[in-house]
Length: 116
Image (cartoon, rainbow, N blue to C red):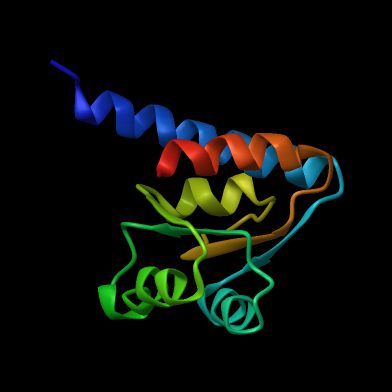
């Protein structure tokens, strides 16, 4: 039997790690729900990551739906604090959109293939 909590934690770690690598190697992403929404609407987003612990939930509820409409993969992670930290922020972030993976494009494609 597969331990879903462990699989989810591993996937969260992979997402945080990928964000840190992209940041370190000059890639770019949009931070915050408004910026992520704009990136999706402008077809700039390659992957959308949003946090599960956002309150109220209504703030991020549209992101998975908009991502699906635009054909952009999205993933939910547990912690907005960890998400912000991985993006190089001193505060949490409800959502991040990767717009340019730079040298980590292959790692991004690998992660996206795991999500499908």
